[in-house]
Length: 547
Image 1 (cartoon, rainbow, N blue to C red):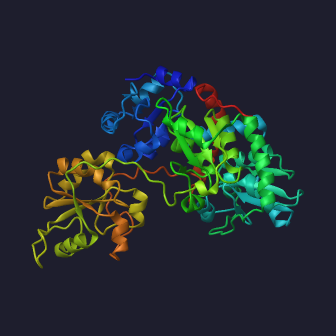
Image 2 (image 1 turned 120 degrees about the vertical axis):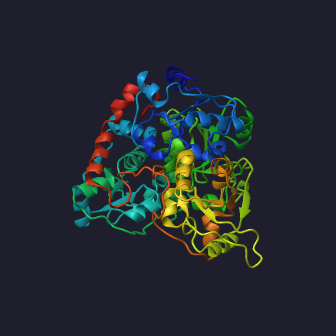
Image 3 (image 1 turned 135 degrees about the vertical axis):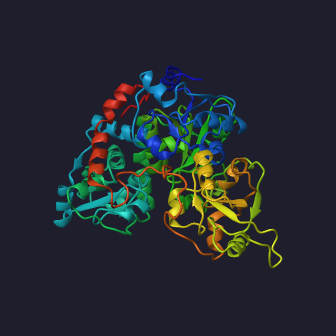
């Protein structure tokens, strides 16, 4: 067991530690410590080696009395982690010992953003003021600092998609006239504050302001958003890149960002006492086209927004790469202020970007028992039964088929993917709740002869096979390639919440996402953000500073 005081001391002293909350995202978002990283019990095998790469990292696991921590600790030990302990008393123990707790997700970054505005008085305009500028056709450009898919969902009229790390690189080409007023927005506050302050820190001559409270503020003001916008940033000239690189390097130097060569990085990665995250902050498209071996894609704007996801080991070392001298320096400048040991990789030739496609992920081999079943075989089984999943009649062998058995199909992917499309008749179930929810599902029908597991890509479901076989007492097969392979085979897909065996707690509904969040939830979210600076003061473990 590890007590609150020991975790808090490690955080204050900048020692490496991973405080891992094993709950699903929704309960996690309701209440958790500042630097707790959410990694659900269901995804330990698929994600742990990537997110916590050093096996002797001190890992403290926690829950809120659900019994997840003990199970997770054993799974982590089975994965090779050697310093795993439970947080004494879990979440309630943290609170009882005087630990500060926070709501929502990505709280380290959001609280830091509020601290930046508090310290630097980042300039902003209200939604009605920005709307008036647009309608008056003033010399103004609106730059949306979110991911492109978020921008497409809802955006400010005339807005252009320029994800956060791209702002200093692209702003001069989008506003070449120094008298052009640049307005930066996001959905709420953090990315617009950080984006605006990035341009201010870089010394652009333009007037630069944030859209106060982002699309939430726009909506609360009764103003209409645009759906499906397509405006994206354009390529920059070499002169624009060079000027932006000089600005970004100056900001990084002010923040105390370190420099590292490829040879020096190789030495660092061989160190057994430190964790080093190697992150490529360019766009996902650039990363897929060509990247350095050993690096993962972490577009800079989202990296600053989601540090707890990309680097859950607090106190670890982070090395950033780009090919322009702007995005890595600007992203690193913010990470340094967030008390990360961060460096930019210098002196890389494009010829050294020798890998393409997604970065390979290290995952353990799933434990038996499990049998593979192809989409075609499952479709044949379904047709023989006459109804997928909760069928009630026995199947019989025919057409030379090999022992067809009536299946219970369980989808272990995300609930969002299940709703978008799943194998007809499949029940959605949370792996973290298999013990109770599978038994309840089996009690509804006694005629199942085997279980077939699936998920979106077929990567997660094999790890649950052994547990499902033990609980169900039935043969277990895994759908090869998961739902993606089912669709690729041209087979029928069902949509909606057709059969939920577990509550949809795997995803926290952000008040700022989508277009139908209640106005009360939006306002409550803003009120919560306004209080984060005070909470930071009470927590006292962050080490944040603002240049």
